[in-house]
Image 1: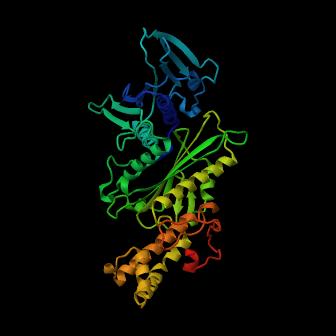
Image 2: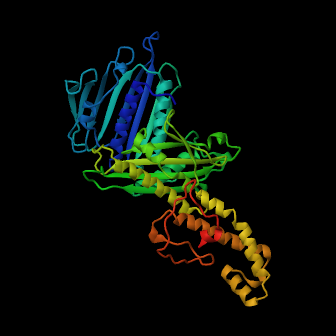
Image 3: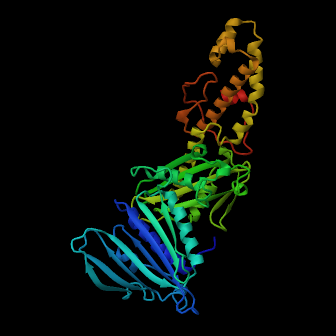
Length: 480
């Protein structure tokens, strides 16, 4: 998507401010954006009258007094720099009206108060901003649609957004689009932010980045088939830390070969980044934090970090049709604190690792390290050898004890059954040990091959297998 024009950027800023006023409200709110284009006279470039209204908590005058706009957007060809707005809070007895001239410098008479209207005892809150600009609907509308497709990932349940577009010179051209965060898989208002983020990213994935109105049927992508991991980390507010809270959701999905977006379902991962509930570009230091993660210990090989079209991670070893989606949301206990520190960078890495570990815990065999994959390849031969030793033994007591440990009944005994059972247990142990190797030394030693409830001791040392390390290829060493 092309970079938005200065006028479009200003409109998106005004829309985002209205969205935030709705988000922090404790009531259900409506945000309406109305775009009306006309040629007056026909020889001139089209003029778009823009109205952005919300039923949120009421606007703060500082929002507008500090509003900035690129100088190239304020000229006679695009916009005269004038906008008007009205606002009121529930506790106000009047609806206040203002005119704003962005041609004036900040604090130099740019804000003019106009006559207000009494509310006559009515209790309501809200704001409306109006301006007229010379801009193309073909540029403005896609930018707004794209903006709200991302906002929906946050799944803020109390805000309904209504976008109305009309060309007054073309009869029947009126178009309306409604964005509802809880339209699919509704969550309770009390759901924590990370659960909303997970649900929002799932919606985003099954619609291929909201490019579709419904789920992609050729893919058979349904919520239950997605593998999702959540990670959350926070730092305390201090002189050295900004009190950052980092929430990460990572989803692994697979596209069928008949999917129209099959070729786009692998290789690259877009980093969807939100800061203080606002979609924005991910900071460079956070991109560096992602690059510094030991992805190989999760079986992933990171290629380039591409920021030409946004922020993307490129993978070198994903199977065809496999796609990894990542959303990262950072917010602070005190939103006014904006500084970023080295501790914040470490916090990002920690939250991503927690999400990756969560995936490994919930989905056995997912994100196995390169070493675990190599060891797993020996499991079939080992299982066949052990099954042969058991079945060819002349000691019936030994055989019965082995069958009991394997959970098999004597009448079920077949060579293939025994072999498959042993192989499954070996693979299960390898998968479990690969998960536990990412944790602290308190969660120590590998589990027993024939026991489901395993006791752990403190003699296990946490290992990270990097390429070139002296890795043991002995399966028995790995299981011990």
